[in-house]
Length: 179
Image (cartoon, rainbow, N blue to C red; front, top):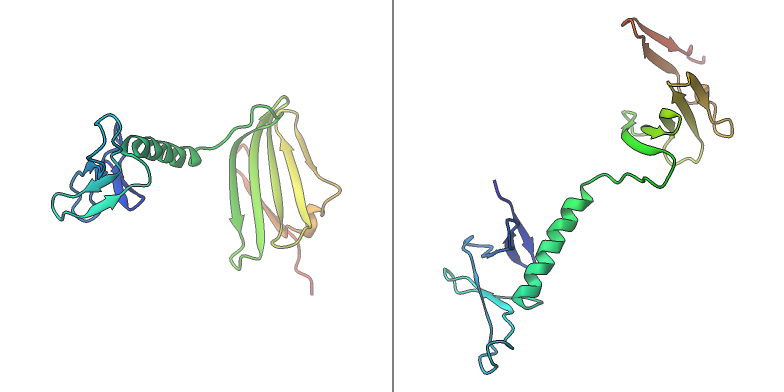
């Protein structure tokens, strides 16, 4: 199914050369100009008209430049949806996920990266709006689990950890609530 995009008050298709459609009747519109006194090669087609309602849609550019603008705008929209992988840095992000507590007071973010030493999982967690957070690093290839000691200790943030082991065994470790 083709999509139509509203740009400068006109509907545009994204297939091939951008085509203008009336926003009311969805009828393809033709470009025309008021500059009838100029030679054909010099005229700028900067208006669109719907044959159904005879509505005039002025364009901010001539038709050729408008089509180029629409094509670039649609391409930019598509590019904004893509993830960016920074090859210049040591660690390249592979995946990430974010979660919040039910009351939206706390957050946890997990980022999986690929680096020279293999995959690394980085977990950030803390209270929203505060600078203090904990960072946990898991590096399976070198069998390392660590946390950033200049930040908050993980036990000050997490009260429970669920683990699922390679054999399918599940275990939960939880702090006893303070009285």
